[in-house]
Length: 295
Image 1 (cartoon, rainbow, N blue to C red):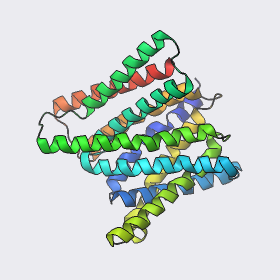
Image 2: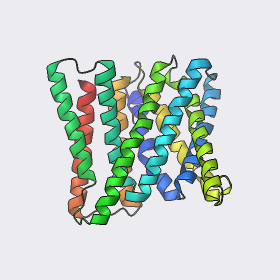
Image 3: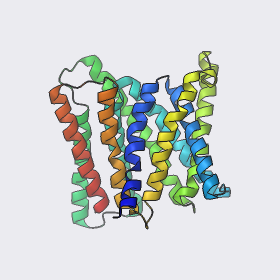
Image 4: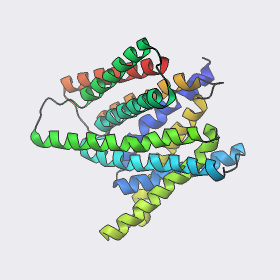
């Protein structure tokens, strides 16, 4: 692996690692966060496509690209809501674990991955490690009925959100688009969800519209972090760079930065034992991710 490929492969570490913390730090409601960050992603995608001379896809490819973005934005709204329930430092490892589980199971069921008995055994053990790792990251010394109830609610919501993240990854695979060609259609789909969500909330709640709240547009900045991560991952996963397996492993390192910056910069404190459990859980998740893509 050359230096350039490694640096590009670590782009998601910075982008996806800092995105949850930056979005939480800027604040606002989930509707502000999703509206601003998708606008930031769209701006980034338009500028990139213009520089690269990439024209907008059409027909089935355009539809699938937009569908991919719709899946991500729908899931991200749920994730933003869970940030408010349990904090980004707990929500991120859980949602990462669900995405790893979803991707692995989809590969086995639909794509015929892990064909041998040994692969299925090691793959099954890796999935168990992911579940154990995620459980450790949300472990708490002081348990209460209220905290347990909130945690269960957040975990269930993040599990539902996995459907959207799965669509984000799966839809482009059914198209003829390269990763870079899918970038702009995905961004369009993301903005469509954000706009519809914002309009529906405005009508239902009769509160101030997210379109006129300044905090929404501050989140354009957080959207740049997501867009940078998404683009560098798409480039990293290409065969002439790091390839899909290595690119995927490198991108999953983002969960470490997302979790630790949430703890350090957002006041999501941990006791000494809880911090130890969190670090152990993150290590298990990354080990399992490495195993699943190497089988």
